[in-house]
Amino acid sequence: MNSILNQTGITQRVKQIVLGFTLLGLAFQVSAQTQVDDAWVRATVAGQQATGAFMTITASSDSKLLSVQSPVAKTVQIHQSTMKNDVMSMQPVEFVALPAGKAVALDPHNYHVMLIDLVGQVKEGDKVPLTLVVENAKGEKETLKVEAQARPLNMPDHKMN
Image (cartoon, rainbow, N blue to C red; front, side, top):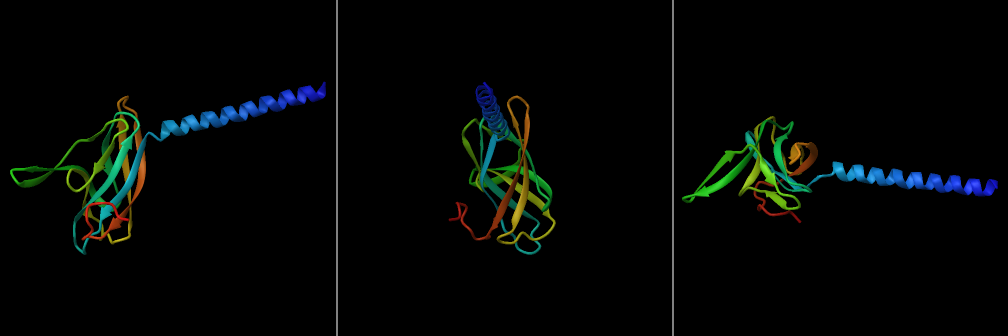
């Protein structure tokens, strides 16, 4: 009889452990709503006061990038570059729409992050901390901490290999 009770207790404990891991997995999925890939910052020369940060963002649900902060700059803004009558202009925007499941590229030719009033030179190879705030359609905010590597000034705008 003790053997049967022991097996029942073990079976119950295994079920509890499995349930615990399942709930932990669900909690992780809820917290990992947005993914950031290939984050990089353009290196600067001494005395340069601004640079850009670029990345690809994929949200699991309709969301928007609301803001970005970084300790390397006094001011951080989300900008959009546009071309009109052969003239490129760059303006701050309130947010960037992140449609569910669609990778949105922040690059020099469209949306990007401007780091303004730099506190020092950003040198090639530096790791630049960025904190992104993303809000989903339900109004829930998610904070993402990213390290963007500084790439050379003369680097083409595409991925480094």
